[in-house]
Image (cartoon, rainbow, N blue to C red; front, side, top):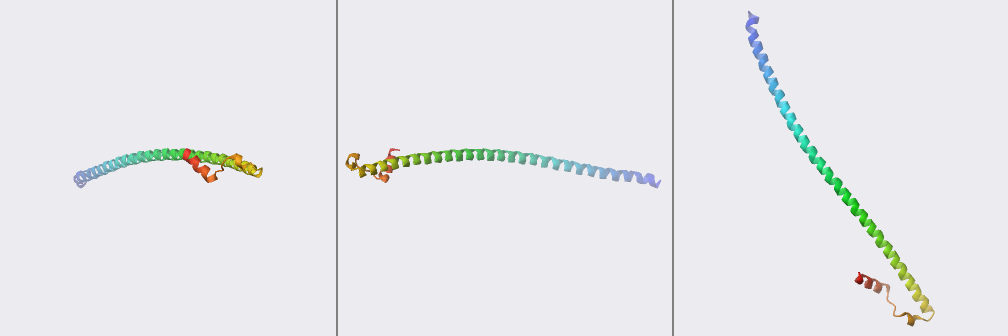
Length: 121
């Protein structure tokens, strides 16, 4: 009879422990769901930040390419203009050596020609 009397108490105790375990399991499931949701939101935010960073990098690369091309064009123009100036100066020196300086017209300094060119731009 002792076992028969004690059985309901054991069952009640085990039932109570089972209920507590079920509650703990429900709590853990809730925490997991919240963590999963937070992770999903964080992941989505990071994906968006990554996409923005990639777009920014592409834009910067494009801008750098454009700047390099523009600088190369300016260098080529300057090289061509300097070559033309040197030819003009050489022609002026040759004419001066031949005594034709008066026929060549007034000489402008390189600085003066550059100012005039900038003003025209």
